[in-house]
Each structure stands twice: as C-alpha cells, then as structure tokens.
Length: 435
Ligand SMILES: *[C@@H]1O[C@H](CO)[C@@H](O)[C@H](O)[C@H]1NC(C)=O
Ligand SMILES: *[C@@H]1O[C@H](CO)[C@@H](O)[C@H](O)[C@H]1NC(C)=O
Ligand SMILES: *[C@@H]1O[C@H](CO)[C@@H](O)[C@H](O)[C@H]1NC(C)=O
Ligand SMILES: *[C@@H]1O[C@H](CO)[C@@H](O)[C@H](O)[C@H]1NC(C)=O
Ligand SMILES: *[C@@H]1O[C@H](CO)[C@@H](O)[C@H](O)[C@H]1NC(C)=O
Image (cartoon, rainbow, N blue to C red; front, side, top):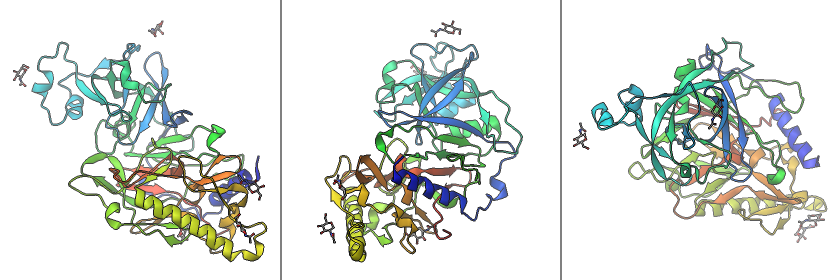
C-alpha cells in the first residue's frame, strides 16, 4: 500500500470519526427500515450497475444506474423467464402513468392482448424502442443497521420489457437494462420502491472508491432506498457513526424533469473563487440549457470549456503560490506539473503533490461547490491517480456548447442522498477543523 493510499485512508478515517455527528432529523428516519442494494462498476464503460434480485426463480440482474431515467427496464429479447411475471394491462393506472397524457381508450386501441406498450429509452445511445410494461417480484434486503421494522419482501415492481437486444448497445456488457431513478416519474424505481416497501421517496448513493487509482479496478458501492442510517464500515476501524450530511435544494429543469439539478453559484479551488460567466450556471427555463446536474454515468465531472479553463488555471496558480509560499522547503515541497494524460489536461508529479495539504491549518480543501446556503467540499475526490507517479485534476472539458454547463460525475460524488420528498440533496464532507 503506497503512502498516498495510507494518507487517503487516514483522511477518510479522520473525517468520519472526528465529526460532531448529529443524527438526521427524526422525520427523515422511516418507520420502516430502508433497503440496500449492491452496486458494481463496469470496468470498461465505468457505468455503475445496481444488482437486483427479481423473478421466480429468483435471478440477479444488473441494471445500469440512470439518475435521469423515468422507468426501470429489462431486455426481454430472450424472453423473460419468470413464473411470477404479469403483463401490465393497457387499462391499468400504471399504464396511464407510463404514457401520460395518453388516455386509456387510446392505449387499449388495437392492442391484441391488452398489453401496455411503453417507450424504452437507452440513456447512452438515446435510441428508443417500443416495449411492454410488465410487473415482477423484487426481493430486497433491509438496511441491517436500521432499528425499524424490516421490510417484507418480495414485492411487485413494474419494468419496461424491451424485445430487441440492440437496445442494450452502449450499456455495460453484463447489464440487462437500466435502473431509471428519475425524480418526477411515478414509475421511476424510487417511487415504486417507496410505495412497495412503504418508505419515503429518498435514495442515497455510496460510491466511495477507496482507491484513488483509476486502474486499480476497485469496483462497488451501495445504493440505499428509504433513508439511513448510513453507517461506514471502513477498513476495519470500529468507528461506525451515522454520516453527517449538509443539504442544498434540488432544482427542477422544466425541460428535463427527471434529472437532479442543483444551484451551484460559484466554485472555489483552494479557497480562490474561479471566475465563471454566471449565465452558464443558471438553467434557461425555455431551453433547459445551463446549470449543474449530477450524473453517475459520467466518470469525471465535466465543465463547459470556459469554466474548465478557468478551473484548471486556478489549480496551476494554486500550485505556483504553494511553491512560492514554501520556497524554503522546496527541496521536498515543490509541486511539479507533468505531461497531461488524456482525458485530463492538468497533471502533477504525484510525489510532489502535498496529500497532507488538509492537515495544514487554514489551507482550505481542494474544490468547493458554493450553493446559496451551503458549501460542498469535495477535497478528497479532486485528483485522480492516472498512473504511477501522475496525479491529474480529475475534471474534463465538456465542450463549448453543452446542454448542462457542469455535470458532476461519479468520481466526485462520494456519498450523496437524493431526497425527492423534501426536494434536497444531502452531501458529506470532511470536517477538517476538528482535526
Ligand atoms: C427458464 O427457467 C427454467 C426453470 O429454472 C429453466 O429450466 C430453463 O432452462 C430457463 N430457460 C431459459 C431460456 O433460461
Ligand atoms: C383507434 O385506432 C384507429 C386506427 O388506428 C383510429 O382510427 C381511431 O381513431 C382510434 N381510436 C381512439 C379512441 O384513439
Ligand atoms: C469547505 O471549503 C470552504 C472553502 O474552501 C471552507 O471555507 C470551509 O471551511 C470548508 N468546510 C469544511 C467543513 O471543511
Ligand atoms: C521547483 O520545480 C520547478 C519545476 O521542476 C523548477 O523549475 C524549480 O527550480 C523548482 N524550485 C525549487 C526552489 O527547487
Ligand atoms: C517525480 O518526481 C520525482 C522526485 O523528484 C522524480 O524522481 C520522478 O522521476 C518524477 N516523475 C515524473 C513522472 O516526472
């Protein structure tokens, strides 16, 4: 284990153990225990997949996590081999929800077997196919750390069923479909599980990737539905506190209602505000362009070109001012830039990057997203070790005309709670002042 890994573990440990842990407000604690699924990361596409046990006999399917998806769906081109599966009828309320605003009369017009047809969308290729809505049993595990009544399982969930295999193009090879976790659709997996297991519309992603190394192949993570407690079982340390969360409101983009937008007002790099054209940070209500959203499907946060340039420049300036401030120590504290490794453009010699920077008093953490009423420091996730000896600023150029100006990707997420019921995003950050 390299010294940087040890420092990283230590930082995590510090941030989780020395926090003035406050319990979540009572109303966020469900009377029913929440549930947990394991996540797996596909090493080639870097997509996260949720592992769901469904059908009879029970089988595990992997569905690519799509935060903006309106519906969970499976490819059924080889048949859906389950004795507990039911087609959803075209006259059912679920079918109406899936096809709003089309009426039942139209939905059932000309259908041979009363099947409910739905559009199935591949979030990567954006291709769409007609499929059918089905329902089947889902078997779940209650959150083992919850004191509340365990959920009773299995329960039924509706899935889109796509009958052509090509709909899977662009998705992780081992996946069988997509887990749509959109915030507005009643058929997104979030409200469906909330109704089936009787908890509120809330889910949390734990993508803590212990390794900072891209190639280490560290996969995994967890997704919680129905709330916490969100306990860490880290590296054998027996400090098992619930997480301390800070919140910011979730915004709705009227042109993209399923997605999770947040109100980033500015960005700081090591305490210095990055100059950004403010217009890029707000959502144009007519076109849906601009603003900031979260998307686990992209591995590294992407930024519109002018933001990206200003952002990486701030890193370079930070390194220079760090070097100047430590001139007398420059023999061993001299942050050195090296040839960048794509897709990144700003890289440093790892052995010269002060990983202990957070231990220094008053040296603010790497990156902070500034919201109207809170600040999200993502200092543990700003750099990426791309190969032996090279650390890069783990953000990428999103082009000059992206739909969304900043898309916060998996690498920078760490832990996030998406609370649809209260329309807020909860995040966790290192609490450094107590160290
Ligand atoms: C469907 O499930 C049955 C029972 O487990 C099994 O015998 C059969 O081979 C399966 N068929 C396919 C196509 O997977
Ligand atoms: C049902 O379908 C037929 C033929 O496609 C169409 O002419 C008719 O208007 C439809 N009826 C309704 C209620 O949508
Ligand atoms: C987060 O970062 C900001 C600005 O960099 C800093 O002022 C603040 O103290 C940090 N908060 C925590 C909890 O570390
Ligand atoms: C710091 O590193 C840079 C680039 O390698 C070098 O040019 C400079 O002389 C170094 N500064 C000191 C004081 O060693
Ligand atoms: C990084 O710095 C160390 C120590 O100065 C040096 O030995 C090594 O070759 C450098 N690595 C790269 C990739 O520049």
